[in-house]
Amino acid sequence: MGLNLNPQYGQTKLSEEEKEGLIPAYITTNAELNYFDQTNISEALLWLISQKPTTENIIEVSFIIRLHKKMYGDTWKWAGSFRTTNKNIGISWTKIPLELKKLMDDAHFWVNNKVYEPAEIAIRVKHRIVSIHCFPNGNGRHSRILADTIIQKGFGLPKFTWGADAYTNQTSLRKAYINALREADTGSIASLLAFAVS
Image (tube, rainbow, N blue to C red; front, side, top):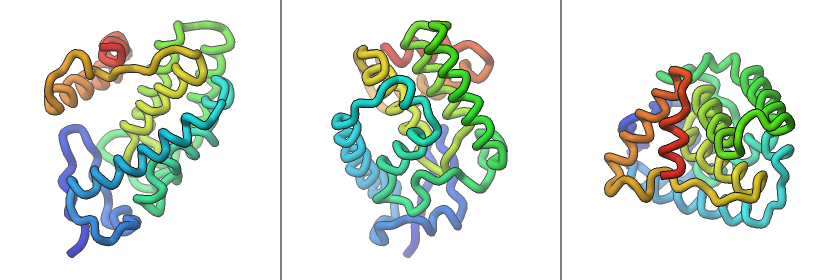
């Protein structure tokens, strides 16, 4: 029957080649994929609990890749591999390694020189990761878990709530998140930071 996915509001579309990387052959719908993904992500969160990384080794390209692989490795053959196609958002796929390295260098500078408060560092990294759009799928969830890891494991502070206390349903939550991301694209991360802690 094949994989018949309809991207939700703000999601990127997978190419046919990327769809062929699906590991569980029985999955054909968004609902089945989301359920399976959540199981895989829950296992990744358990793995994260057992890790004792510092801020310095969280903001490394190798950690970014490893986290995506842990989150989606049971779902997609290409989990933890940079995308090789252009999407409706994100930079050209050919620039991903260079731009990700630049982000990691910037983040190390922010941490070492206390340029921003911890929450702002985590959210700035999260936003840039989404803007780069390193992987074919899962960039939003990956970047949110990365931000939580930076704030919790790196700075010893509570993880973000991501609007859970402010929005009563998933549709309004997702719209608020996408709007905050778009505002951050213009250079102001105030709304994204406010959303993360709301």
